[in-house]
Amino acid sequence: MSTIERDTRHEIIDVAERFFRQIGYQKTTVADIAKSLRMSPANVYRFFDSKKAINEAVAERSMIELEATVAAIAAEKRPAAERLRDILAATCRINAARYLDNHRLHEMVACAMEESWDVVRGHIERYDAILRVVVADGVAKGEFTARDPITATHCVRMAMLRFCHPLLLGQCAELPGPSIEEMIDFILAGLGAGRQVA
Image (cartoon, rainbow, N blue to C red; front, side, top):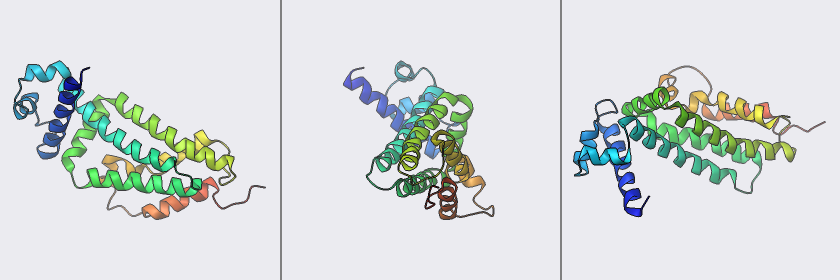
């Protein structure tokens, strides 16, 4: 793909995301996106074979931005418990800022989860890989007493679902339960942070 083609692809994604935010995924048409870019729908279809493919690209870019943020935290030279705390808090903060006040983006994510599960599954696998590095480091250095970093990573992600899942953030906002800080404390305690290994 040439630089011009790559730039055009990025422009299509930018405009699509703007429309998804403003009028919603269902109401946005490829013709709307094309008209905004002063090109024909046929030209948009040269880069994306369907509106679903455009949605996948918008969703994937959003997921990759989050992954880059948490990967940078994971790579810091600090105790694993501190890094894990910051990764979980950042994930919640970023997703809340992105989705909590924008119900139209909820629609986009719901469609991505229904129609493009491979994109979502790829994100979960990459996110878990980042978490697993930190958890395994904590286990190796005796910070965590959890024995299996893979299982521990899955448990951490599942425990945080209500605070990080784009759709559950809004749906669970009014339910009674722990704060994000209390949940992270609970997770770290479950990993055995602060306990001496016998």
